[in-house]
Length: 232
Image (cartoon, rainbow, N blue to C red; front, side, top):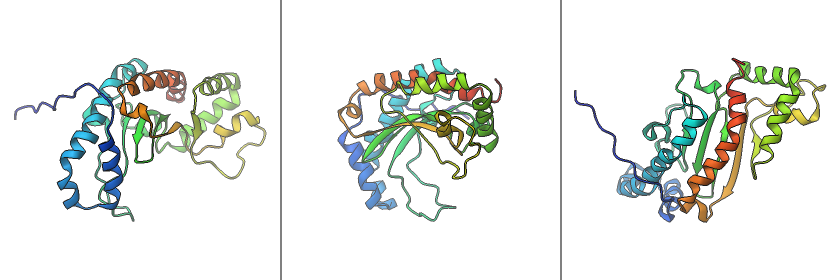
């Protein structure tokens, strides 16, 4: 069987007004008929720029961790929703994203970099998706045993404009003796760093690439810290 060559990915030049309009309209016209009528818009203004952005960011991601998956055909999300086990039977998603994660079977317990666009905002950052309790317990052990190391990582995050620490947290205090400066991550069931921005001129510009390169570069130290929790 001949090997299929993936379509060429051009240089990223920014998203377009049509990108935002399509993601906005797909929510109210969530039918296969509507989607097929607008498939060309989706491919030209949503899918293609996302793949181009993924390709543009691949060098900085590979420098941070060569084990990351950077193939644009694999890191960009699907617009189609998996409705088999969901109460929401909408066929298509209202947002699109790309995720750079390691090429391992247990990727949920390894942090990932991501970028997402919806009609109202775009967001990016780094963290876990569906992380296990064991991995978060490993993080808590580091907080308990190496507070200076964790303090250094938190200080680096605070230097990134707009970056916040998010994730579901336990309501009951797991260890009240832990200093307050660490409680915001000690209490987490999951952990990710995110910068939320309203749709602005940057998202329509090729300059988005350099902006994300800088931000991802600043997150590299914390990424490696989380990545190495189980092996460090």
